[in-house]
Image (cartoon, rainbow, N blue to C red; front, side, top):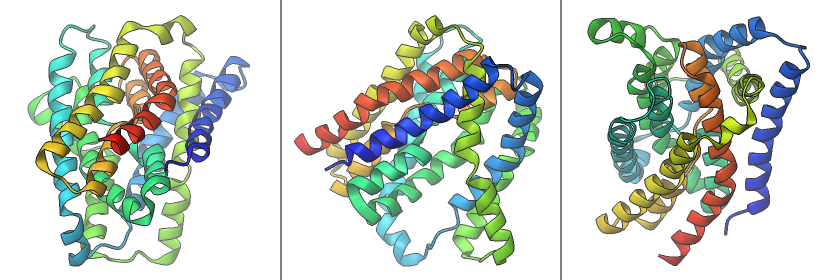
Length: 305
């Protein structure tokens, strides 16, 4: 059974961090200059360290054989989310479209999803969640980042490949596949800096929310996205896994992680690349709030099907 107290505590932590950023911005303790600097700090240092740290786990041929199924399922989910992102939002405002597309492709499965999976399925589920997240991490810093760029072709790839987070993904994959151990002082530094990611990211989103009219959180597009992210995608994943005869543990982990709300990087990248940061912050906040109901509901659905 799901640990509801642990889930609520994790979601409450997200909102408290967001509230601190909102408070400091509303009280004019911090200004827009600080917000821009914090955005660059997160994207160029904190996020890359967090990505590298996420790949530093034991991985060998035996583990690969045990977890190939979740890797295949996760890759299929990312491809499906990419197709949904391209199809579902064609009629939306141009300023909102990249936000909706990125948020559909990239969820908050790492910070919120992994602890939930650990509480439901234990250490074996947590291992599978680490494998599940690999295709998403690659997608979010390639195709996902491309949603926010205005260039195409060679210029687009230069911008994408020049992003520090892309370099971090490639380095992380090398560390994962070779099992090369970083020097202790370097590894500990990366772990410490990467550990700041959640706090700083949610604080930044709170600062962005300080400029948002609360009525914007009832925006129809935010609610529509939340239905896609929290209902449609996990529903399709559950149906697909049942039809394919996927193992029960793989199905459970995949459904729970696919039912996570929008990731905090949605608002961060929107702010960095001149997107609709206010709308992005609304999508993150609304979908995270609604996930308080959606995640337990999907856990119940897994038990009943």
